[in-house]
Image 1 (tube, rainbow, N blue to C red):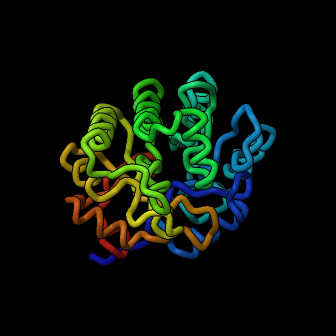
Image 2 (cartoon, rainbow, N blue to C red):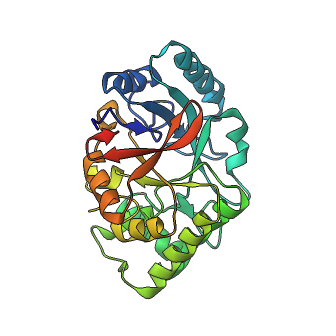
Image 3 (cartoon, one colour):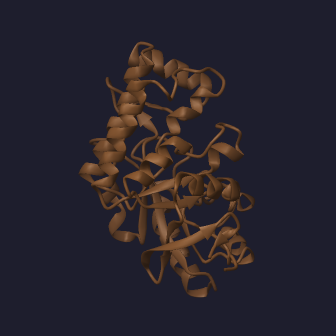
Length: 283
């Protein structure tokens, strides 16, 4: 069978920290001949956040995307990447207005809310680790996965975003080893939560092509375990520019195949469906 393009449902725009307009992102999807595509800019937060959409812009974002859905030759979907912060922000704050949701954890703390950005700069991470967790990386990582499980159990998104993004901080200074039993237990418990939920697991290539990680989010060993549990996956690039639309997809497809996957889930006629794939695209 010949391949016929990719899909991507984790794409940002200049409504948040993306660089290009909604129309430019959609045009790129059309140029690439994508099977279907979704835009998922960062949802508003009720505090200052440099990379999130301002609340005042939400209606305009939804309106523009709905207009593009009518005019584009793409099968286009409206989404948001929504931060889960207990007591501050949850998935259902916006899900009723959307075609799908990506639920992510970017903030972690035990002592205050919202805490600090776990995927910020190395210096912000080091300072936050000391301020909020007294330098105890195990406690921070456990809190990160605990919050992910809380999200899945309390208010599940359509897609669980970049499951192990906490590992991006390991590139320049290795805080933990993924082979350690305590870390693998946190991942296992989180995969069990996903397995018992209606969620899809995102395979996200951004860490690779931005040179933050060696592998996808999540790592290949996690993908293998997810396949063993029968967890459905969807592939995305977490694009912040139009040029990043399919970055790393061939490598991620190879990793998925190595893990045992032969199908990824795509949106088709407003329904999530399994679709066969290879390293060149959807079949």
